[in-house]
Amino acid sequence: MALVINEFFFDNSGADIYEFIELKGDPNTDYSGYTVVYIEGDNGSTLGRVNIAVELGPDAITDANGILNIEFTPGELQNGTGTIMLVNGPVTEAYADVDQDGTLDVAWDIVDSVAVDEGGTDIVYSSTVVDARGGASLDPETGEWVANDYTGVGLPGSSEVGPVGNDEVASTPGAVNDSPVGEDEEPPFEPAPPEDLTAIYDIQGEGHTSTFNGLDVISVGIVTAVDSNGFYFQDATGDGNARTSDGVFVYTGSAPDVVVGDNVQVTGNVGEYQ
Image 1 (cartoon, rainbow, N blue to C red):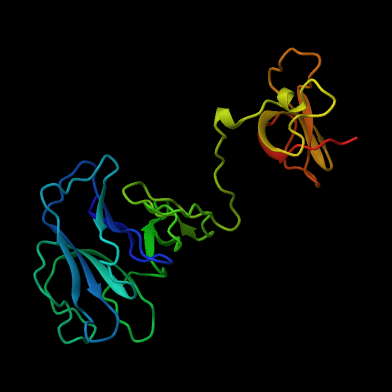
Image 2 (spheres, rainbow, N blue to C red):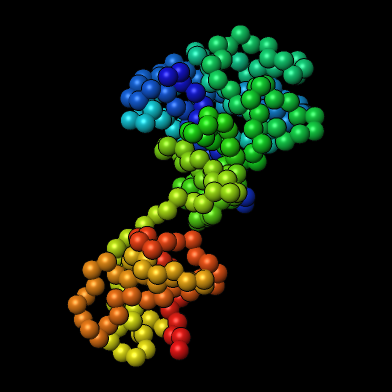
């Protein structure tokens, strides 16, 4: 595949912590000789200036996923309106738009470009403009640009863990891009690690009152009966102990979206009901 701009990030809420421009091409391929360019777009004395021009050297080899990530010092990629370009060949010009009329005055072999436009009288130099404050990613499923989470979810050194907005994605520098979760979609199911699970028979225990009463637990089992406000599920194998219960009732408050026979993972707060 042709080398393209795959993801970028230059501004997060608070102090900038990590900036990058990520390219994607064929796996394990040398793309030396290309140049990554960032052009100033804020309308002022530096409009059209080449703020960044990084020529890829002999170590510019994509990984097994075809990804090549270029890191920058926080603050090196200027916030605001700007255009990122991927040029085949060297770039030596200080300005791409010398007369600042919104038209490029260079004869570069531009193979890809993307811009962020903060509006007003600012100028971009790409037909691809994304609605993003600090960064964006190419959706691997649709090929469309989507905004990266502005708080910095996914960035190295970030303490933000999400969740991200329905039409946003976490930053994934050096890794395969995420796809956004739409408003009518549910996040993909992620099984809890075994060490975080509590067996159903351990929840009830051998006593009259559960030792987990009032605590949150995660358990897995098979749905055995469904009611209007919850469902019963039981451990698939049990513990062979007649003093414990291999099944419990899960209160949902309304008709649950399960059927008998479903193998489910449940997270809930343990309570004693008489």
